[in-house]
Image (spheres, rainbow, N blue to C red):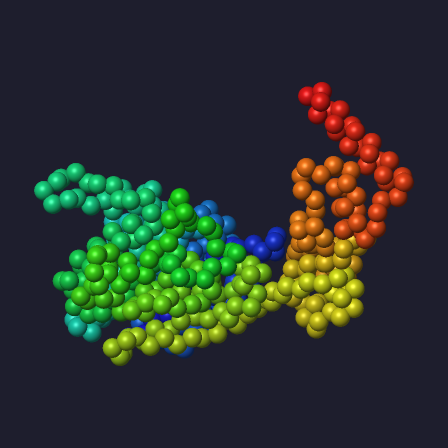
Length: 395
């Protein structure tokens, strides 16, 4: 059997006040065409379908249109991520389970979506994003001989382990192969600037061994065949004894992803170990980062300067006049313009706190402007410090 693994669509995303919905619409057209060509048994969408818990009407319409076209060619299984509202995304999930399976309720964990039958079946165990404060109660387990449920530890690893123990229990009595679909931060993954922090007291990591052991103390006798992950936006494999992969976001959502190679994963479960193919996602906009003096940036502008969205860092020691206008004349789609001239090295050269404030200000002038203040500037500086001392003494 073959499956398309995708995640982190973030429909409705805005990049520095620029709506990405027109570009996302083109991506969805690509996804429908890919599904039509590949003819997979299922499409697995591993969370963060929307960018906001309360999605815009246009984002909802985009998803509705995409799903209505996708189910003409395959079955779709999806879970909410940390950006989604599980309740809103899961609305109507009990009404259209034949071609679309939305697993948003924690009570569904351990009950797979089954593709095929008998020993050739593939069981997809969907685990929606687990908020520890909620899941540690919902997935609380009872000790033998004790009817009271004991709250799980308040960490992502603890609640994921409990969810996977439910998966393991079901796997023991069900033939076929097993895929887990999750939305989590797995230790060892490479993050970007556009993922929302999901740490709870610093404990956002889910450990690789948790998947290898299916939440137990030792390696699972019958391991998972593949873990389809969402949350991290860079496509990547996690080093483990079983295949664990993030499909990544289909397009860059921050300048830290400007050089990322965006792909969609296609999983084939024909051999003993799954085979993964990578299909490039056509990029309909371009992100770039540049740094240099204003002269360097404007006199040697690259060919993409007119059409790419750009983050510009201007390094002149003195902030140039009309900085924004001059940058945008060359980079009309510049979304971030920063002057960082003296900020990087200033801390290393500035005097310590016990030095006289006048001396400190003079040192600042020398570092920032390359000269000492003139008599008029010295008088202003001295007057300013005197006023500040008088106000401090009076308070």
